[in-house]
Image (cartoon, rainbow, N blue to C red; front, side, top):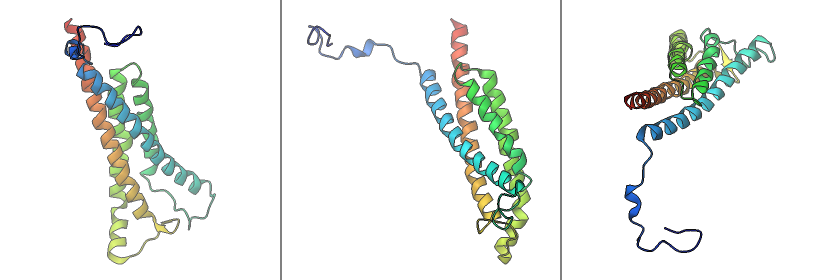
Amino acid sequence: MASRAGPRAAGTDGSDFKHREKVSSHYQMSASSKSEIKKLTVVHFFIWILVAAQVAVSHLNLVSHDLVAMPYQWEYPYLLSLLPSFIGALAMPKSNISYLVISMISAGLFSVAPLIFGAMEMFPLAQQLYRHGKAYRFIFGFSAVSVMYLLMVIAIQVHAWQIYYSKKLLDAWFNSTQEKKKK
């Protein structure tokens, strides 16, 4: 091994690394899952900004309703979807299992459920657009149904991955606490 005093210590060829300790797998899993959840939270925040902007612009009459359509009913409860991400962010620094569980459950209620409701709410309009080519709501010249379905496809994937990585993180934290109790 090299030292500050000079070259590698005598009697070693550098192959003495196998006895060194390794980082436990649940710590590696925890770090990688936290990183993925943070990235997904940033993407979720951008999606939330788009939905909130549409709701705010349409209700404050900043532009005409021909340019930005009135929001669909599912968009209002979806605005609460920032709450699970905030609770999840609170769970990260100290590996708080209860906050993470609350975040996962509320993500299903405030993020995924409004998206499912929205898909059902907009389905007749999407069907009408597909069959007859008629759209009555527009967002910057594009059919509002098409734009919102595109946003929903991305959002459902983001939330599904958030819940998946939260589950992996929960398993890593739970295994960590079980190992501590055994000692």
